[in-house]
Length: 210
Ligand code: PRP
Image (cartoon, rainbow, N blue to C red):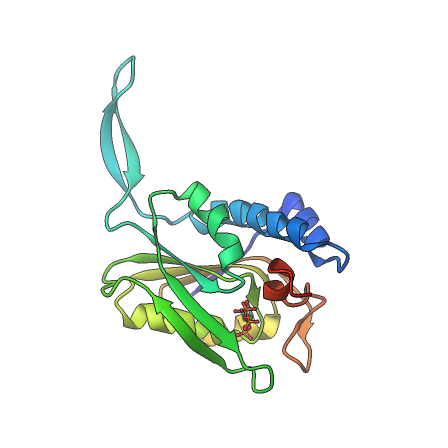
């Protein structure tokens, strides 16, 4: 498993506005989308391509196109939905599947309440989107699920991670073909399982329930 922390001043700038408790939902939503587009550049570095012959107005040449089977983008509901458009903008030919997961507020254990994915994921390259990697429980469950269904390699794109959660994912996925791309690694997790300093509850801030 590989971890890539996207270190770019534009990402840090947008993240700072995202963290601010005074940033309202509409701005929060656009920033999540913009951050996803920036992170997608790093997250798709290993996207599978195949050679294709074309003819320019000047000469024949060989380029590349996205390989078959098409990549699968899997936003984790709810908060991951805010990242979907940013990703499909850069990877419009990808297929999209959904996983709905919620974390129990007391035990912090994730449960899967919705699943809409292709039946067979054999050889599929999957991109999991979830803005927050806190304890890592949700991401581990999501990646396990995709690998068990035959996915070949999985890249998770997260906006923020806690070091504890990243370590948990690294331990669980040590010998798997998994990459985690993250905008920033924060200081720690608090006793309620929130990333500190973090940005609060991404789902609530995206969908206006705070
Ligand atoms: C949040 C977040 C992740 C998860 C991270 O979702 O979007 O899915 O918690 O926590 P973990 O790393 O400790 O598992 P939440 O359960 O709040 O659901 P929501 O997206 O519907 O708000």
